[in-house]
Length: 304
Image 1 (cartoon, helix red, strand yellow):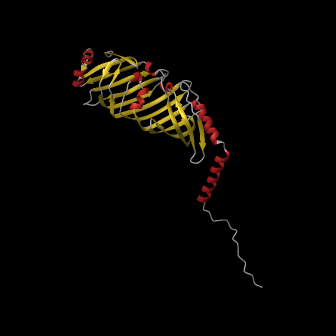
Image 2: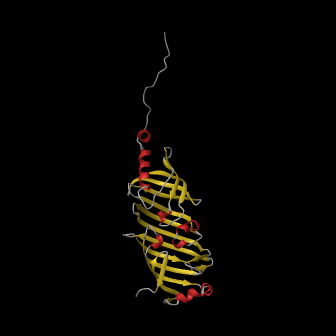
Image 3: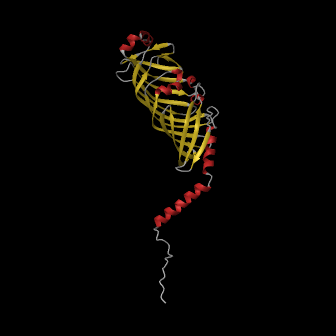
Protein backbone atom coordinates (compact mmCIF):
# COMPACT_ATOMS: atom_id res chain seq x y z
CA UNK A 1 0.00 0.00 0.00
CA UNK A 2 1.28 3.41 -0.91
CA UNK A 3 1.13 6.15 1.68
CA UNK A 4 1.71 9.85 1.07
CA UNK A 5 4.01 11.19 3.69
CA UNK A 6 4.54 14.92 4.25
CA UNK A 7 8.22 15.63 4.32
CA UNK A 8 9.49 17.90 7.05
CA UNK A 9 12.54 20.09 6.35
CA UNK A 10 14.68 20.16 9.48
CA UNK A 11 17.37 22.42 7.97
CA UNK A 12 18.04 25.74 9.70
CA UNK A 13 16.96 28.91 7.91
CA UNK A 14 19.58 30.32 5.63
CA UNK A 15 20.49 33.39 7.65
CA UNK A 16 23.19 35.57 6.14
CA UNK A 17 26.11 36.54 8.34
CA UNK A 18 24.93 40.13 8.89
CA UNK A 19 21.51 38.90 10.05
CA UNK A 20 23.09 36.41 12.46
CA UNK A 21 25.28 39.18 13.83
CA UNK A 22 22.29 41.46 14.45
CA UNK A 23 20.33 38.62 16.03
CA UNK A 24 23.10 37.70 18.47
CA UNK A 25 23.75 41.35 19.31
CA UNK A 26 20.05 41.91 19.96
CA UNK A 27 19.79 38.91 22.30
CA UNK A 28 22.90 40.07 24.16
CA UNK A 29 21.60 43.64 24.54
CA UNK A 30 18.19 42.54 25.85
CA UNK A 31 19.79 40.03 28.24
CA UNK A 32 22.18 42.71 29.48
CA UNK A 33 19.35 45.12 30.25
CA UNK A 34 17.30 42.41 31.96
CA UNK A 35 19.98 40.90 34.19
CA UNK A 36 22.58 43.62 34.75
CA UNK A 37 21.48 46.11 37.44
CA UNK A 38 22.03 49.11 35.16
CA UNK A 39 19.24 51.19 36.70
CA UNK A 40 20.73 50.77 40.18
CA UNK A 41 24.18 51.75 38.89
CA UNK A 42 22.90 54.86 37.10
CA UNK A 43 20.82 55.95 40.08
CA UNK A 44 23.81 55.46 42.37
CA UNK A 45 25.94 57.71 40.13
CA UNK A 46 23.28 60.43 40.13
CA UNK A 47 22.72 60.33 43.91
CA UNK A 48 26.45 60.68 44.56
CA UNK A 49 26.77 63.53 42.06
CA UNK A 50 23.90 65.68 43.35
CA UNK A 51 25.12 65.29 46.92
CA UNK A 52 28.79 65.88 46.19
CA UNK A 53 28.77 69.69 46.61
CA UNK A 54 27.95 71.07 50.08
CA UNK A 55 27.66 74.56 48.56
CA UNK A 56 24.95 73.36 46.18
CA UNK A 57 22.79 70.70 47.90
CA UNK A 58 20.44 69.60 45.09
CA UNK A 59 17.38 67.66 46.28
CA UNK A 60 14.53 65.78 44.59
CA UNK A 61 11.49 63.75 45.65
CA UNK A 62 11.70 60.74 43.33
CA UNK A 63 14.15 59.11 40.94
CA UNK A 64 12.95 56.39 38.56
CA UNK A 65 14.26 54.36 35.62
CA UNK A 66 12.49 53.40 32.38
CA UNK A 67 13.85 50.54 30.30
CA UNK A 68 12.08 51.55 27.07
CA UNK A 69 14.30 54.13 25.33
CA UNK A 70 16.36 54.03 28.55
CA UNK A 71 16.01 57.14 30.65
CA UNK A 72 16.01 58.35 34.22
CA UNK A 73 13.11 60.53 35.41
CA UNK A 74 13.81 62.84 38.36
CA UNK A 75 10.83 64.63 39.91
CA UNK A 76 10.68 67.94 41.79
CA UNK A 77 14.34 68.86 41.44
CA UNK A 78 15.24 71.71 43.79
CA UNK A 79 18.22 73.90 42.88
CA UNK A 80 18.92 76.28 45.81
CA UNK A 81 19.99 79.85 45.08
CA UNK A 82 23.35 79.06 46.73
CA UNK A 83 24.22 77.08 43.58
CA UNK A 84 24.40 80.46 41.81
CA UNK A 85 26.14 82.33 44.62
CA UNK A 86 22.94 84.12 45.63
CA UNK A 87 20.22 83.96 48.24
CA UNK A 88 16.49 83.72 47.73
CA UNK A 89 14.01 81.32 46.18
CA UNK A 90 15.31 78.12 44.56
CA UNK A 91 14.72 76.91 41.00
CA UNK A 92 12.27 74.00 40.96
CA UNK A 93 12.09 71.65 37.97
CA UNK A 94 8.93 69.52 38.03
CA UNK A 95 10.32 66.77 35.81
CA UNK A 96 13.87 66.18 34.64
CA UNK A 97 14.33 63.56 31.90
CA UNK A 98 17.82 62.06 31.50
CA UNK A 99 18.07 60.04 28.28
CA UNK A 100 20.99 57.61 28.51
CA UNK A 101 23.56 58.17 25.75
CA UNK A 102 26.23 55.71 26.91
CA UNK A 103 29.45 56.20 28.86
CA UNK A 104 31.92 59.06 28.85
CA UNK A 105 35.55 59.01 29.97
CA UNK A 106 36.11 62.63 31.03
CA UNK A 107 34.73 62.45 33.64
CA UNK A 108 34.15 58.69 33.79
CA UNK A 109 30.43 58.02 34.12
CA UNK A 110 27.08 57.77 32.32
CA UNK A 111 26.32 60.38 29.65
CA UNK A 112 22.81 61.86 29.33
CA UNK A 113 20.76 64.14 27.16
CA UNK A 114 18.71 66.19 29.61
CA UNK A 115 15.26 67.60 28.83
CA UNK A 116 13.19 69.77 31.15
CA UNK A 117 11.19 73.00 31.41
CA UNK A 118 12.93 76.05 32.85
CA UNK A 119 10.66 79.01 33.64
CA UNK A 120 8.11 77.56 31.22
CA UNK A 121 10.60 77.25 28.35
CA UNK A 122 12.03 73.95 27.02
CA UNK A 123 15.66 73.35 27.98
CA UNK A 124 18.09 70.75 26.61
CA UNK A 125 21.59 69.97 27.83
CA UNK A 126 24.12 67.16 27.78
CA UNK A 127 25.36 65.97 31.16
CA UNK A 128 28.01 63.47 32.25
CA UNK A 129 27.76 62.31 35.86
CA UNK A 130 31.11 61.23 37.34
CA UNK A 131 32.01 59.90 40.76
CA UNK A 132 32.86 63.34 42.16
CA UNK A 133 32.27 65.74 39.27
CA UNK A 134 29.56 66.62 36.79
CA UNK A 135 30.10 67.99 33.26
CA UNK A 136 27.35 70.10 31.65
CA UNK A 137 27.15 71.19 28.00
CA UNK A 138 24.65 73.77 26.73
CA UNK A 139 24.52 74.10 22.94
CA UNK A 140 22.80 77.14 21.43
CA UNK A 141 20.34 77.27 24.33
CA UNK A 142 17.81 80.11 24.36
CA UNK A 143 16.94 81.63 27.75
CA UNK A 144 14.84 84.58 28.89
CA UNK A 145 16.52 87.48 30.68
CA UNK A 146 13.48 88.41 32.77
CA UNK A 147 13.60 85.07 34.61
CA UNK A 148 17.40 84.94 34.85
CA UNK A 149 17.60 88.43 36.34
CA UNK A 150 16.92 87.12 39.85
CA UNK A 151 20.33 85.40 39.72
CA UNK A 152 22.28 88.40 38.39
CA UNK A 153 24.62 90.47 40.60
CA UNK A 154 23.27 93.55 42.38
CA UNK A 155 19.67 92.62 41.57
CA UNK A 156 19.82 94.12 38.07
CA UNK A 157 16.68 93.47 36.00
CA UNK A 158 16.92 92.69 32.29
CA UNK A 159 14.49 91.83 29.50
CA UNK A 160 15.00 90.04 26.19
CA UNK A 161 16.43 86.72 25.07
CA UNK A 162 19.94 85.31 25.30
CA UNK A 163 21.63 82.47 23.39
CA UNK A 164 24.06 80.45 25.50
CA UNK A 165 26.84 78.02 24.59
CA UNK A 166 28.60 76.67 27.67
CA UNK A 167 30.76 73.81 28.85
CA UNK A 168 31.12 73.55 32.63
CA UNK A 169 32.52 71.07 35.12
CA UNK A 170 31.44 71.18 38.76
CA UNK A 171 32.54 69.26 41.86
CA UNK A 172 32.57 69.48 45.63
CA UNK A 173 34.13 72.95 45.60
CA UNK A 174 31.70 74.30 43.00
CA UNK A 175 32.54 75.20 39.41
CA UNK A 176 35.93 73.77 38.45
CA UNK A 177 36.01 74.69 34.78
CA UNK A 178 33.92 76.92 32.52
CA UNK A 179 33.89 78.02 28.91
CA UNK A 180 30.99 80.36 28.16
CA UNK A 181 29.64 82.36 25.22
CA UNK A 182 26.40 84.32 25.53
CA UNK A 183 24.83 86.74 23.06
CA UNK A 184 21.65 88.76 22.59
CA UNK A 185 20.14 91.00 19.93
CA UNK A 186 17.22 92.36 21.97
CA UNK A 187 18.60 93.25 25.39
CA UNK A 188 16.52 95.82 27.29
CA UNK A 189 17.22 97.34 30.70
CA UNK A 190 13.73 98.12 32.09
CA UNK A 191 13.03 101.08 34.33
CA UNK A 192 14.62 100.49 37.74
CA UNK A 193 16.90 101.84 40.45
CA UNK A 194 20.53 100.65 40.19
CA UNK A 195 22.91 101.53 43.02
CA UNK A 196 20.66 104.46 44.00
CA UNK A 197 20.40 105.76 40.43
CA UNK A 198 16.92 105.85 38.81
CA UNK A 199 16.92 104.74 35.17
CA UNK A 200 14.19 104.79 32.56
CA UNK A 201 13.93 101.91 30.06
CA UNK A 202 17.07 101.53 27.93
CA UNK A 203 17.04 99.64 24.63
CA UNK A 204 20.61 98.28 24.56
CA UNK A 205 19.97 95.68 21.79
CA UNK A 206 23.29 93.86 21.38
CA UNK A 207 25.27 91.89 23.95
CA UNK A 208 28.26 89.57 23.56
CA UNK A 209 29.95 87.85 26.50
CA UNK A 210 32.87 85.42 26.25
CA UNK A 211 34.68 84.03 29.27
CA UNK A 212 36.67 81.00 30.36
CA UNK A 213 37.93 79.80 33.72
CA UNK A 214 41.60 79.65 34.55
CA UNK A 215 43.18 78.40 37.78
CA UNK A 216 42.07 79.41 41.29
CA UNK A 217 38.51 80.46 40.34
CA UNK A 218 39.83 83.09 37.93
CA UNK A 219 37.47 83.95 35.07
CA UNK A 220 39.16 85.49 32.05
CA UNK A 221 36.70 87.85 30.35
CA UNK A 222 37.84 88.02 26.74
CA UNK A 223 34.83 90.00 25.45
CA UNK A 224 32.04 92.01 27.03
CA UNK A 225 30.50 94.10 24.25
CA UNK A 226 27.20 95.93 24.71
CA UNK A 227 25.12 98.10 22.40
CA UNK A 228 25.39 99.24 18.79
CA UNK A 229 25.70 102.65 17.09
CA UNK A 230 22.09 103.52 18.01
CA UNK A 231 22.14 102.30 21.62
CA UNK A 232 22.04 104.78 24.52
CA UNK A 233 25.01 102.96 26.09
CA UNK A 234 27.88 101.23 24.29
CA UNK A 235 30.83 99.49 25.87
CA UNK A 236 33.69 97.07 25.40
CA UNK A 237 35.43 95.56 28.44
CA UNK A 238 38.01 92.85 29.07
CA UNK A 239 39.74 91.56 32.18
CA UNK A 240 39.34 89.14 35.06
CA UNK A 241 36.81 88.15 37.71
CA UNK A 242 37.99 86.05 40.65
CA UNK A 243 34.84 84.04 41.25
CA UNK A 244 33.51 83.92 44.81
CA UNK A 245 31.26 80.89 44.52
CA UNK A 246 29.56 81.47 47.86
CA UNK A 247 28.68 85.10 47.06
CA UNK A 248 28.85 86.08 43.38
CA UNK A 249 28.32 89.77 44.20
CA UNK A 250 31.52 89.78 46.27
CA UNK A 251 33.71 88.47 43.42
CA UNK A 252 36.72 90.80 42.91
CA UNK A 253 36.94 92.27 39.40
CA UNK A 254 39.64 93.96 37.33
CA UNK A 255 38.17 95.11 34.01
CA UNK A 256 39.47 97.66 31.54
CA UNK A 257 37.90 99.12 28.43
CA UNK A 258 35.75 101.94 27.11
CA UNK A 259 32.17 103.15 27.29
CA UNK A 260 30.14 105.73 25.35
CA UNK A 261 26.72 107.36 25.83
CA UNK A 262 24.30 108.85 23.33
CA UNK A 263 23.72 112.60 23.51
CA UNK A 264 20.07 111.99 24.39
CA UNK A 265 21.16 109.86 27.36
CA UNK A 266 23.64 112.50 28.55
CA UNK A 267 21.02 115.24 28.21
CA UNK A 268 18.61 113.22 30.37
CA UNK A 269 21.22 112.23 32.95
CA UNK A 270 23.58 115.18 33.15
CA UNK A 271 25.21 113.82 36.29
CA UNK A 272 26.58 110.89 34.24
CA UNK A 273 28.41 113.31 31.98
CA UNK A 274 29.82 115.18 34.98
CA UNK A 275 31.17 111.95 36.48
CA UNK A 276 32.57 110.62 33.19
CA UNK A 277 34.38 113.86 32.31
CA UNK A 278 37.17 112.85 34.71
CA UNK A 279 38.19 110.07 32.29
CA UNK A 280 40.15 110.36 29.07
CA UNK A 281 38.04 110.31 25.92
CA UNK A 282 38.92 108.75 22.56
CA UNK A 283 36.51 108.91 19.62
CA UNK A 284 33.54 109.54 21.96
CA UNK A 285 34.51 106.62 24.22
CA UNK A 286 35.53 107.18 27.84
CA UNK A 287 38.53 105.03 28.86
CA UNK A 288 37.79 103.36 32.20
CA UNK A 289 38.90 100.65 34.59
CA UNK A 290 36.54 98.83 36.98
CA UNK A 291 37.76 97.31 40.24
CA UNK A 292 36.19 96.39 43.55
CA UNK A 293 33.42 93.79 43.75
CA UNK A 294 31.15 92.57 40.96
CA UNK A 295 28.09 93.82 42.83
CA UNK A 296 29.58 97.27 43.52
CA UNK A 297 32.26 98.14 40.93
CA UNK A 298 34.48 101.20 41.39
CA UNK A 299 35.39 103.12 38.20
CA UNK A 300 38.77 104.78 37.76
CA UNK A 301 41.17 105.84 35.02
CA UNK A 302 43.15 102.93 33.51
CA UNK A 303 46.56 102.36 35.07
CA UNK A 304 49.37 103.57 32.82
